[in-house]
Image: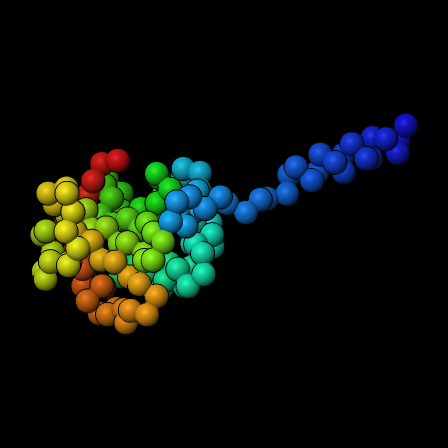
Length: 152
């Protein structure tokens, strides 16, 4: 009898083992909605190939540029914001690039290059072989963090 119980416990333990997140269309990781650094780090770790390195670089740059930044994963995208002010930036994985969304991007100088159907949003698409201008990105992050954010 004890042997059967042990087998059941062992079988149940297999179900507790974490599984690798599903990658949605374009390779975007499917991560459960959650607040804090943990869900964002899970998203970054699940980003496929070279995109995970880009995710780590972006996350590090944002954290250095905006000490105390708040993080969450919503709609399968990491969001960065200021408590009480809303979200100022989001990241999303696509097949050939990582998209950085500045929710008040039309207010940034210079304006990020990618246009959006949404009036104020601007994008920066980062492809595998792109040189990342970290100084410009940090300037945009600083500016974006000082603007009222999106309430999502």
